[in-house]
Image 1 (cartoon, rainbow, N blue to C red):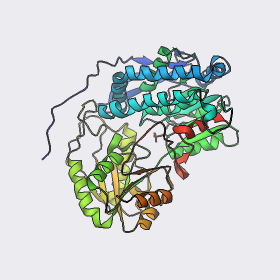
Image 2 (spheres, helix red, strand yellow):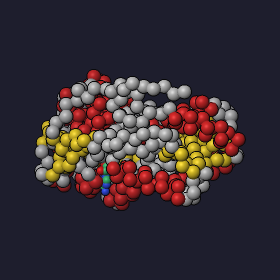
Image 3 (tube, rainbow, N blue to C red):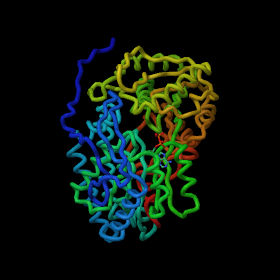
Image 4 (cartoon, helix red, strand yellow):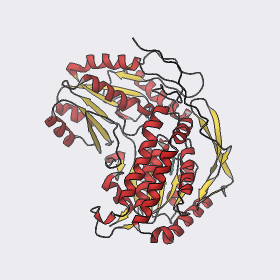
Length: 477
Ligand code: ADP
C-alpha cells in the first residue's frame, strides 16, 4: 500500500526575483558591456524567471582586471586569519538566508525543495565553514612550508548543483588567497548572483569574487583570457576536452571535474533494504543529474531478481511533480535540451534490446519531465551502459564473481565513483583497491563532506575538490 499525500508546497514568497540581473564585477552589479542578455526559466513550468546579462570578452576583461587588482591589493596582502573571517561570514549569511537560497535554487533548477533545502544549501555553507578553517593553516596542509596562491582563478560550473558547485569552487580558492571570476551555467544563474549579494553583505573586498553570467561563449572567453592563472571546470567531458586543449602549453593551471558512469555493485550478502535505498539515492537523487551517479547497477546473479523486485516496489512509491512540494522526490529535468538527450539515450536502450520499465506515474503537462526508469537485460555494449545519460535512468547488469564485477565496473572510459554493497569488510577493501574510481562508497552512496576529496580518473577529469587535497589545486607549493 502506498500513502497518498496532500500537497505541501513551500511558499516562494521568500524569494524576490528581479526582472533582470546584471553582472557582478568589482563588488558591484553592472550592466554587461556586451549589451546582450538571455532568459532563465523555471523548468517545472517553463515560466520565464528573469532576464540575465550575458558577458562578452570585454566583460571578461573587466572582471579579470578587477580580480587581478584585488589579488595584488587588499586580498593578496591579507593574513590568512583575516581571510578566514570573510569565509565564516559568507557561511553564516548562507545559513541565515538558507530558505531563500533553497527556494530560488529549486525555481531555477527544478530540483525538489527537499534536496535544495537539506543537501545543496547546508553543504554549500559547510564548504565555506570548512575552508575558513584552512585559511590560516595552509603551511600545515602538507604542500610545503609556505604555499602561495596562484592568482586569478577562472571557474566554470554546471547547472546540476548551481550553488553547491559555486561553493566548491570559491571556498578553497578564497581560503588559499586567490581571487575569482565565476561563470555559472546559463540555465541556472540565479543562485550564484544571490551568492554575489552575500559577498557584498559579508563586506568582501571588491574584485575578490566576480560573477559573469552567460553561455558557453562566455566560458570560452574566460578560458582564453591570459590574465587568468588557473581554470577550474566542472561539466561535460566534451567541453572539458576543449578547455584542456585551450589551456595546454600556456603554463596555466587546470583542474577538470567531468562526467561519469558509476557502478553501484550489490553482492548477494548485501543488506537488501539499505541497498535498495542506496540504489534509489544513487540514480534518482537530483533526477540523476549527478556526475557521480550510480547509473549502472551491477547485481550479483543470485539476488538480481529479488533485488529488482524490491527496487520496482520502491520506485512505485516515489513522487514526481512540483519541485516546491515538500513531499516531492523527483523534480523536473533542468532543460529541454537535457530532456531530449535523456529521451534519445533511453530510446536507444529500447532499440538495442534492453527491457524498459517505469512505475505508473503521471507527468505534469507543462515543464520538462522524465519518469524514473530502469533498463534490464543491458549488455556492456549498449549505449545506455557506456554513455552518461545524466537523467533518472538506471541500467542493470549482472555478475557472478567479484573479479567479474571489477572488470565490468572498470569497463568505462570514465572513473569518478563506485558503490559496493556487501557485509564483508575484506571484500569492500579488496574491491575499493581494484576499482578505478576517484570516490568509492561502501554500503552508502552519494555521501559528500567538505573534508573528503572528490574527483576522477581518466575521462572523468583530474584534480580533487574538498579536503586537504582540494587546496593543492589553488596553491603553488
Ligand atoms: P552540461 O553537459 O552539464 O550542460 P557543459 O559542459 O555543456 O555541461 O556546461 C558546463 C559549463 O561549461 C556551463 O557553465 C557552460 O556554459 C560552460 N561551457 C560550455 N561550453 C564551453 C566552452 N566551450 N568553454 C568554456 N565553458 C563552456
